[in-house]
Amino acid sequence: MSRLGEVLAAAKADGRAALIGYLPAGYPSVEHGAAAMTAMVEAGVDIVEVGLPYSDPLMDGPTIQTAVERSLARRTTTADVLDTVREVAKTGAATLVMSYWNPINRFGVRRFADEMVAAGGAGVITPDLTPDEAGEWLEATDATGLDRIFLVAPSSTDVRLRYTAQHCSGFVYAASTMGVTGSRTSVGSAAQALVARTRAVTDLPICVGLGVSDADQAAQVASFADGVIVGSAFVRRLLDAPSPEAGRDAVAALADELAAGVRRGARHV
Image (cartoon, rainbow, N blue to C red; front, side, top):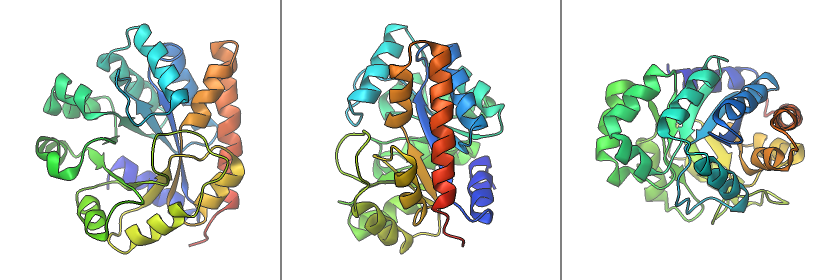
């Protein structure tokens, strides 16, 4: 079993969903970004998504775009992302990279997979890559044992859900809303319906992202999903902080709140 699989299995054995937190590498700096992610883990995050900054983030909302733009302005590189993975993986959390396909392709597909494994990375989420266009990536992840996570959405047909899930490992990423990322005032019914449809075609864990921003929403999603993914809410805490140290404390406080919410929403299965 992969490190990602172990963490998800441990959360399930504890009768709860896993808490997954996202921050882009390189913001407010490479060092401070890694410190913030480490603080998230210490406060209750089980799995960390390290965002690889990209200049054309079509699926990212304004909050994440702002942080990514500032990271790119500091000339954050793919090597910096891998260094961040290395630091965060030392915590014992399953550490993933969330990346659009173009930067991985440009870096070198097999090279990226090899260097992720060497850094202690557990898997990669590729939001704009579909399995039918991922031949080289499937080969690289099969060869290295790196987990690959593709996305499903409410618009996915049952045939598409099955096909996508068959090519995932680790978990299936269920995007609970259509459109770009961002915190929302409610999760909506689409998330639970999508999880139920996906469960019908796979035994893999299903983790829900796009919209969770507080403990109540985390509890709601945790009642039917295997993982609760939080991105924009963590990024907003960093953006609003007056200093990197304050930002680290702010994301840790949010992680603590969300972890309590996840446990409150435990499914006891």
